[in-house]
Length: 164
Image (cartoon, rainbow, N blue to C red; front, top):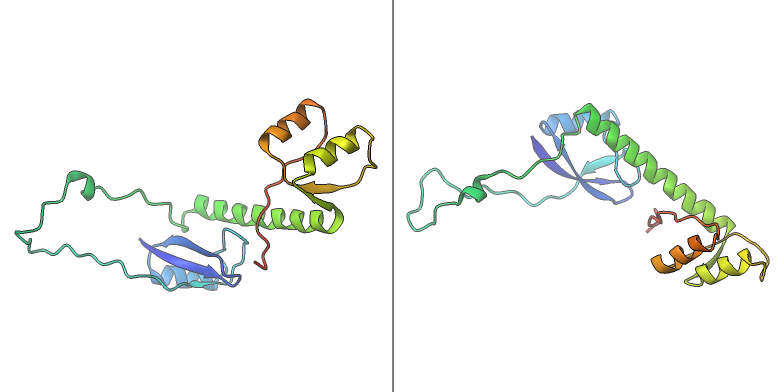
């Protein structure tokens, strides 16, 4: 197994495991490798620092012996060739795509009220100001207070824009 640093055409960087370099090349050409952030299937290998194995077969007498913990290999993520891992990557890409679509819709159709969200939502709920679609930020304490008062709102995971 080999890990590659990859980059999609949108510039997102991520890692993926493959059986070998040829497997990556074949899967990428077939559109089977997707960015977990945006789902883009135009993926290429990113510049990587080489991983050097500095342990030689001839032991240096001055070098300390490795500890047992150092000899335990780190846990490795499942290889993308695994069907479950491939499905997970596809689902993650689709979720990220949908969340970005939601962000575009909210920004296009709602008023941004910034950190005044809780006050604005409560004011509309009480009929003090005309109701309109809004979005902004609120603290966890303010959100809990809105819930307790029966003010309808939804928390949406806010992803960065695709254009940076």
